[in-house]
Image 1 (cartoon, rainbow, N blue to C red):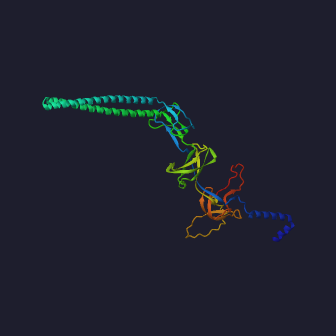
Image 2: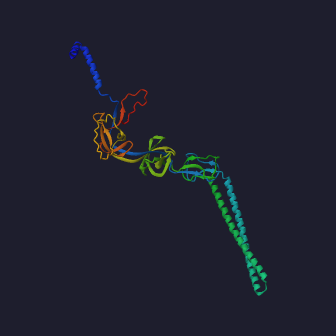
Image 3: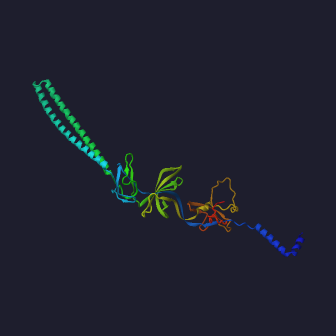
Length: 424
């Protein structure tokens, strides 16, 4: 058989060459390695800063917001300020119609005057009762002396004694009326003071200097202070200093301390990063839909006036920081190569009597880009972007951080440049 094939090949050299090339091509397609549809992306180990942050959201508030109300009911007749108006302490903000309150003042004044006149009459009655009492005392003394010498009967002495007792009782009544008159004057004076106070409260005064950030009344508005004090204005006492009230989740609140550095942004100025500090961590829990959070008060300077009350702040609280340390991207600690590329890893036999302690590992670039080298590491401070490595790596080592797909993208695919970060 072999001799016949050899003879045929010698007689047909061209066809023999073609058949040989076809066989070689088939063998090559069978034994050649399949092309990879992905590649690994690496980053070098660097030395720098590692920050651990807690993210939260909150509202910008004025450091001291004063709500100005009124304790007097009536119609607002004049309003002297508007939104964003700067005011000073003692400045008139608005006026309420004082007609009814002024009538109360006049009525109280009349009651006080009437009580004073009644008191004067009572004082005169006291003087008259004292004089009558003196007359009756002298008359009783004469009648008693005559009765002792037998010139006045027992009945005459009894009549003198009765008149003396009546005079004493009349004096006591006059003195009681004097005390009642004094009490009426004090009552009337108190009612007058209350009416005068209400009259003064018809003029709404700014209790402190600041800026009007809210105005709730206009001329013609009727306010009723029967059950609660209605608010008319809100004054931000000092807009150069603001505070952010941030809600921090209960899982992160244990890392937050007073004095920690804070950075935050607001939607109005997305490119500006504002710096602040934690002033207070309030221990009262706030529960919303079974989610517990705690309020953190953050102080911030607002000298340029960009921050306005009510703005939403995206807060990052720096709970840990280290500088000039060996660091790796945090996602490198979570990344794992494809299962086929990890098959060459040498696994040491495990001691069943030894307690296993989980170790963190990263994968370093080797001479074969699809055969990375596993390296166990120990870490220190862990942040969102970078993590400190205390042993196992040195600056300059290249570690794998993600996988990039090499498949051609369809023309209709909007995500033409997405990376495959999934760990297999």
